[in-house]
Image 1 (cartoon, one colour):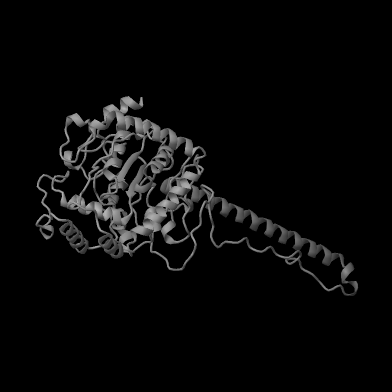
Image 2 (cartoon, helix red, strand yellow):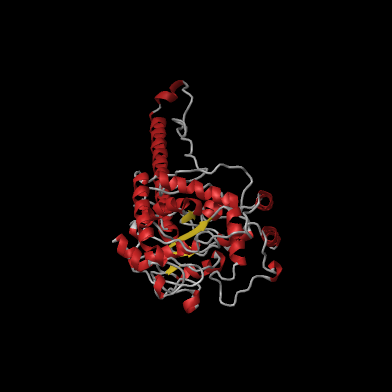
Length: 440
């Protein structure tokens, strides 16, 4: 049903040009080219004034006829050569599409991009700007031949541990390598080109990974997740302050945030200190953008369009149904136990409205808000292409609720994770055996 939601990226534009949507999948657009105006009838004819005996001059009539036939031949030859050039251009574009943009002929849906440099993707049959050329996902389903890689750009505090676990469960159920390996297991920082198809789902900024993708032989499905900037920031602060969380064993709370707060006022003071420690308010934009996107300050739409799918945390289950339809998955493939579901007391009280307002004000200019808007628009477009979306959502939620109740004892606590948790990798894809049995 779905094709690559491509749209590379490029310098953002202030021209105010409206983005186009819902372009016919696989269409070739020759922007700015109109059919040349046809010559007026008789324009190429040699005409003569009808004076006296010239009209009846046989010789002149023969010469005129010959010239007309010659000009007719010129016109036919010109049209023929023009058609040849057009055909060559079309087939050339199609070949380029097959090599660079991996457009799926069987797909009927694509989120079309605007006509700026940021959107030179599948619909225009050229390589994406600012990205290493690699085989893009073009509508293949998981488990097909030759199989696809999955690269999950695992952002910070966006439900990414849960999603990474889902990626690993999908890999484990459909024959992709890498379901049980990662940076902390074998030091891997990229998809292993010797073990394709492969899943990679560790914390790593996309700009650190994109350069390695060009050596892959299999198509790669590019996935990430984003979240409301304020709730994401507060969640990151809570994570940073909790030394018992699943950090590295040598982790220490930053000195700037010590001593550890006790009262509500102290907690809120540390939150504002952490806010002042930030070097950028565009955390998610910086994390998921390509190197060129960040260097040239692409629009958030251009960054979103780098990805085949962007999970919106606030619309998690909806995002899962779209992922299911994109990759040909089942509801059982997408069962999960939430990871890192912790409660924080803020020193005995909740976060005050005044402090929350300060955080919102500090982040109000973040490009992450536009990132969320673009991801939501694209998610809506995907959903509109699934005729029985409501029915699929209802069935998925019912299955997920039953699986959660059945397998909740295997959920990671954030403090200790062991063999008992049935995790495929660290605190990811926990309860896998139980979830698989329940969904079968």
